[in-house]
Image 1 (spheres, rainbow, N blue to C red):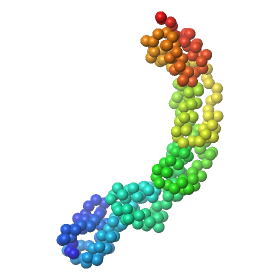
Image 2: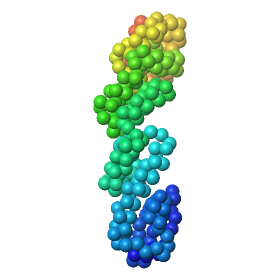
Image 3: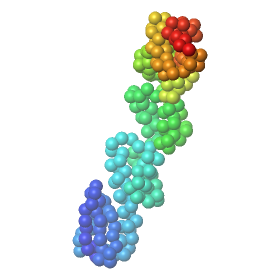
Image 4: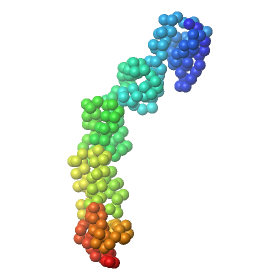
Length: 264
C-alpha cells in the first residue's frame, strides 16, 4: 500500500491517504514513529497495526492537552474522548495509561475540588457532594475529600454568606430575614447544625424603628396593590401579606388603623 497524500489538520493531526482510497488519521508522534512519507509503501500488516494504534494515540494526545489546563475526573475524560469520536475501547486504554502516569486520579481530583471550593465559593458540603457525584466520583472518595471541610471551616464560610444575605435584605422584617438566611444556606448545601450556629450569631433582637419603617413601606405597597378592593377584603389582604413577610400582628394592626380608611 502506497501513501498518496499526507494532509495536516487541526491540532497537528494528519490524514494519511493511500492509493487504495483508504484514510487513517494519525498524530504527529505516530507519523514520525512509523516514518510515514508521501510515496512510502507499507505492508498490509503495518497498515492494520497503524489503524489499531491511531485511535489510541490520537486519544492520548487529546487527553494530554485536556488535562494540561486543569485536573479532570475519569468520567469527564471519557465524556471528552467520546465527544472527540474516540472509540470506547481506545478511550478506556487512554484512561488506563493516564492512571499509570497519575494524570487521572479521582481521589486527588475530589480533594483538589473541595479545597478550591472552600477557598473560592460559599457552598456547603452537601452541594459539593452532589457536584462530585455528577463528575462521576465514587462515594468513598467523596467522603474522604469532604473530610477536608471541617465543621469550623463550614461555620466560617456559612457565616460570611449569611452576613451578605442579611445586609442585602435589610429592608425585610427581622423574621423574614432570618428565614431567608436559613433557606439560602440550605440551598447552598449546609447542614442543620451549621445553620443553627449561624442563626445564633446573627442579631437576635429586632430594631423596632427599622421594623416599623419596613412594615410601613411594605404596607403601602400592599395598599396600592389592593386599593380597588372593598374595605374588609382589602384589610384582610394587607394583613395576610404583611404577616407572611414576618411582621408582628400588633404592628400590622397599628398600620391598618393609621393608614387604611373605610371608604365604603
